Length: 289
Image 1 (cartoon, rainbow, N blue to C red):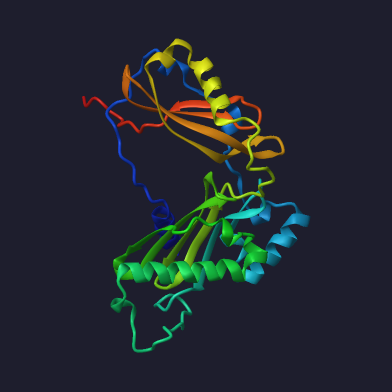
Image 2 (image 1 turned 90 degrees about the vertical axis):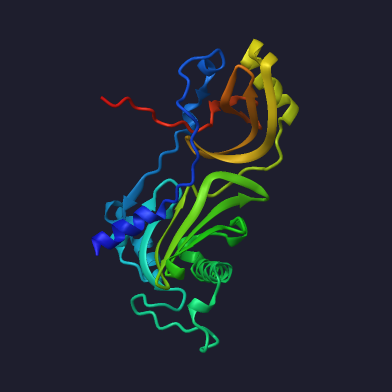
């Protein structure tokens, strides 16, 4: 059983990343890379038995409603939602444990569905699950980015769902819910950075004011800067009771560092620079001996 769960957990992480060549280790702009400590939002997923007794009783009650054993759940203590749930809940007709679901048209079987149809069935079933269990899982389906990223493998026997989060039309960076459906059963689901958002989406600092802040930080390097896409997003932070910030983002490239794709983040309410980082992915070049 543990081996099967480990395999599913591994498949829960979908990597689709392209890499540039080896990262340069010097450059006038590169020495200005910066990341505020408030962006260190490593989460604490706690086993249920480690929770305080008063909190544990409430969480166990929620798990009971879901039909999930306490040892199969981990709580994100920063926001009170489940970071990981290992389940076996029938969601689509299949050969999973205790799965006696049938398609409404009993003459139809899953093999007759194409990938697009399977994705839609999986998404509809997962959303229904979230709606039915709103009191336990505490996910507002209006905040799910639709369409989600859904991957169908092994003729539909394995389905992976990744739904990013939006809030009043703005993307909430690094906030999402995942799910894995295996042989028709929901076997794994969990959230990342999904806390209560209590902030206005109307910035007090304009985009032009935020760009001036970045210009001032770059100094003379603005002369060879190429300004790309800008956006307004919500980012998770770790700043006392503050767990989200509204931020202006700017994508910038530089003529003297052509491989790099820099991003500047500016607090849309305080005008403070939150980060200036190269967001390119580089290959790890090693010398063989």
